Length: 320
Image (cartoon, one colour):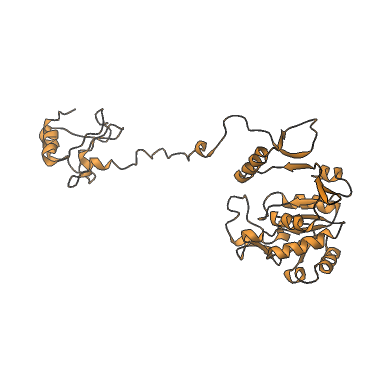
């Protein structure tokens, strides 16, 4: 990022897109910008219910650090935008200042600190901040996609030239850098490529940019692509099979669970449900005994589905 700033022409307008929930390397990136020029920062994205009041990002009116928006992040959500920027010196341009004389309020805020965090509750607030910041050629801008849209609405259209009463487009060079692993970012890239954009994968050397849109992103992952169907399921507990209840067909109404014997490594179940009790009457007649260490006979589960079938089954069964 520092190299990109050094390579930018003096007249270039620098706009840094950030995550509206303050995720990512926010402090490091804004720190690089602030080392080059004062920064006007607005993370607000009102269209998605993400606003900024008193320098605190809110989701539908709830402070970010009181929501679960950071539940997959390695640490807790910051209590304010200033807290997310760490040791950087910041000041807040409140919503009342944004809705008043924005340009004068912004100038005063830039005198107080090199990074100005701007409140925004509506798109109109974003438009006011964008217009005031664009009037200052000495600042760089950073913010959410909502702030980028406001900059686009405020900035004069470029990439066109007038000849008489006709407007002719001239080729523009656009570089889109994508470092996000989010699924929506991948879909956005695929849409750009489908519309004719060119792609450069990292690492890359000797590439040149031509007219049109070029997408720069990390190299393709080797091996099979991990999609929704290829995600690994959580490891099963070693006792998950052993602890499963027997199939419902093996416990017909009126028959105790011990009437079934299985071949899945379980012990014979001719004992009554209470631990330590004697074998059933049918088992005593045949002289069959069961012990916890003896596995059931091979074959699939054998169940008795009626009292008559039960008597026949146990009467005719030979002792092991």
